[in-house]
Length: 370
Ligand SMILES: Cc1ncc(COP(=O)(O)O)c(C=O)c1O
Figure 1 (spheres, rainbow, N blue to C red):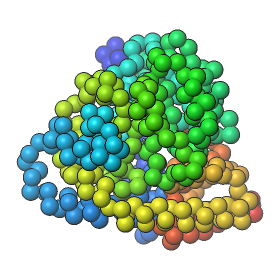
Figure 2: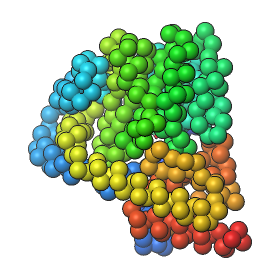
Figure 3: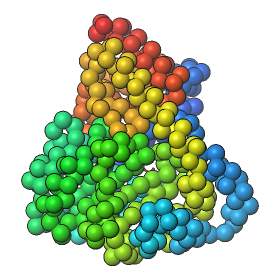
Figure 4: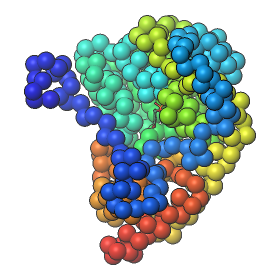
């Protein structure tokens, strides 16, 4: 950044760029490994939805065409699913882009955005880029707390971001807490509920955020095809929100922000009920296995409503990450979230999960912790 000082916008100096993990092939080469397991990005271990793959194959001959800038078929299908007009659906290049569209549309210089201290990193960056002010809300017990959020709200607050379930903690802000918050949140705030892991939810405890949208509250629900439908590589997500907010997002949106293949794959994936059922079943089974193993090893963890588990270790998370990498398993250190003793581990296929716990146990033994 030094050579650019005075040229690039000053705010960029304070932004920590996303730290991408190494490609699996590089890890294999570097450490002389043959079998590397990646449990670092909360991807779908079953692969992409087969119905999406079939639709993509059939569409490859049309790559010379621009995508439909209106995302007509996908939006119609989503509108039918959620029983709302398609004018309340906005598509994004992954739900991550929709986070940026929200800040571009609503955050003026100096406006405040309330974000959980252990909430998904993307919100903070999006607010900083707009020269907004990030106001951290504490997350006691690693989960959102309505009072802690309300205590940080001022007349300058423009946006509130909540990932539910949250990444990297996996924790759920339960219905009661959300109702308490929404009953007190001032109208001038746009509340974004990022439900990237919605399909893994426990419906009993899960709040229905769409109800607030239908009531006309300034609420945006974000969802993605990256996780449960296994389409992370195609970058496609969507927002469900009020018409005025949708119009604002469409004004800042690049016309062709979602690609042709992504739109086609997502439209097909919505019909793939058998795949979704299997994804959810496998994740629930994997979660039970994680809990059993963690309890056997005497390790603390955050109860998860998503497809990953936040685990507390008796050694620094980043050190553990390095040791595990050399043994061929990639997980995510989370020290950047103020959680230096933890790592986040995606629930994988049964064999991948067993491999992780085998290596974890090996490291704990080597270090004299068990
Ligand atoms: C809470 C949360 N929101 C959004 C995203 C981004 O998803 P997408 O692939 O749709 O951009 C992620 C990805 O990890 C996430 O964890």
